[in-house]
Length: 255
Image 1 (cartoon, rainbow, N blue to C red):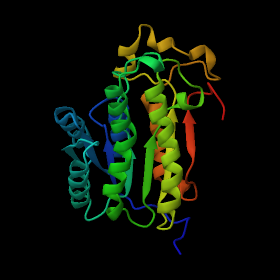
Image 2 (cartoon, helix red, strand yellow):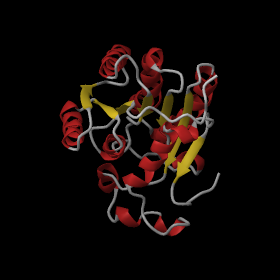
Image 3 (cartoon, rainbow, N blue to C red):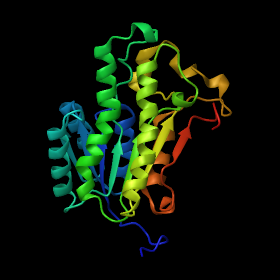
């Protein structure tokens, strides 16, 4: 039986999707700064290469890969190449890729079915396909971390497809935790509140003040506020936590 107090390997291979910018790039920087090998996956290859170059400039090993998380063949190729980069294993999968800023806010009766399908394909099918593809390379003690959203627990008018997709991520995490738990692999979700990324600034004017008055902590969320949760869930101190959703929103809501 593995020792839950044992330290994690000094360098682990971390696969992060949607890491060409925003929160994904912040995750990549956080893991790279701690000496981990980081696979930067994104449909935007130029952005992924920029992230990987920044990590390498800081002394981290990093590989950029173009990936469509909605395509099974693409995710299988991603996992195989990531495992090769990691010496035959992928220690941590961080399913961050999602459609967010471009999702049209509209009453549920008027949502375009094509947009519904696109949101579900990227935000829900994507994490499933990436986890499925990476599963053969996840070792004993491996970690899967999924990104949901705190809006799942409060609702958000005229955003049904986005909120439903992120609610599905929470449900998927619980099932995967049971199935992968047999192999001593944990699966957890991070549900960030509104966080100041490039995408968030593009959503509205005065984004830095949005919702601040509703939080216990009276400041806006920065990407670095979310990174710590991922580092914890990927590290040795969370080895007995699985199937859980960690809301990181400065106390705007309590679940």
